[in-house]
Amino acid sequence: MGSTQMQTLALEIESALQTQKCCFVRPEELKRVWPSVGAEQREHIVREFAREHGWRIFSYNRMLGAMFVRESPAPQRMSPTDLSR
Image (cartoon, rainbow, N blue to C red):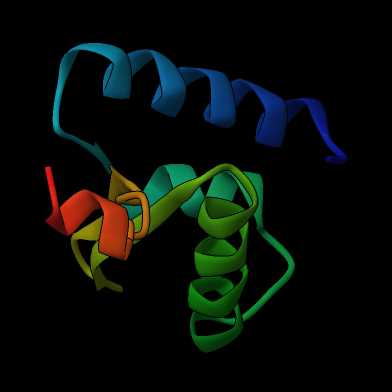
């Protein structure tokens, strides 16, 4: 994964998502973890970071931060045998 700051952020988000439906991370925290990139590139990196951990960004705003949520599992398709039950 990379830096200790990214690992710490991942642990904080995962911990929050154990008991909450979402985890909000302020832009200052995102800038601290990814300081050397511009705002537009940071958004792309944060979205990729979320995807790699099984989360998604529900909302992202450069002034407010990112709202992480768990990625919903893909709906399972019903088989013909399921229909006969």
